[in-house]
Length: 405
Image 1 (tube, rainbow, N blue to C red):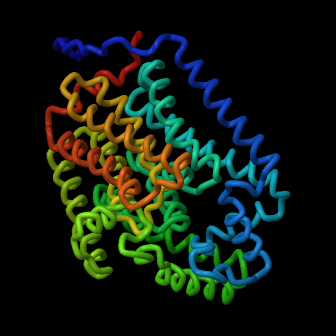
Image 2: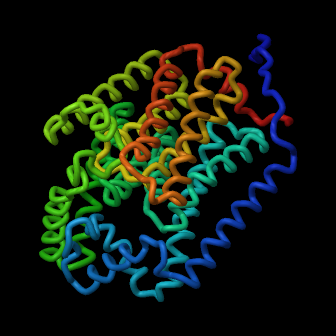
């Protein structure tokens, strides 16, 4: 039976011009061209790829992956992943790695712009435009963060489509690159308790066993032991009074709140449990699936940045996709002006921090490092309020339909 009820007209307001999608696409192509030209001419300049290559080369040679603390901090599985790249000339491998990262990053973001229904082209163009400045640094340097957030975004969508094993593998691979993605995997397991937990455990175990098969098992086992030792010995948390990470620890230090490593571990557990309880309660209130998934992605990312084990300036790229998606969602909701203002404030602070990091190295200190966590806390507060409001989100879902601009 057709629904004959009258739906309220959503006031989308003036959107970007019709030529915006083509213009934004050209901007992305130009940015990618600059990156690839730089990699070709200066493959060892301003890049993290050389760290990945070193791990892959050592894996192939059966050498210790962790000769120094805080040099190569990724898992043995990640080293095995980069082993094929180490067989290629550095110029070609560096370009392939960036193309792989961008392909995953772009595909995941494009999939979210179509979930639950495709947004209008000009709205999508705005989202891509917002994404570009916050992503350039990591794509330029060859960081692993764009690949990691892509896998997590795809895992959430895979769960919604009931592709449980695929989702578990996405989370598993992300976890073996950077440990903190396991936090979002556990939140996913909480929201899908029957289908995902055992598959996630199976995926993590399967990836571990695969890495043993890709080298001599005794060597691989020793490297896992070395990896755990390296993570425990990482000095950046307590390198000075403030530490070098840009997270809630830094916020407490600036406020002169005494905190020990044990206290920090307890705070991580308490905050993670609180977020899990919040999402579980939001789910129990029959929140629409797209809104719940958006909250999971955005709040999970905020937690990983504020309470994760190792948040650096470059790590904040993982907030770029959910932040751009928040703009698209909240622009379509007349009642979300407060949330939109928080998103604008967060975006402004993240962009300002990038500019400080890139062009004002001499002015870097604990207080300038606090800019990114401050923006993340503002966004997290808006997300918590938005998620708890049962009336928020319905108009955004309606506006997500294809529309004439």
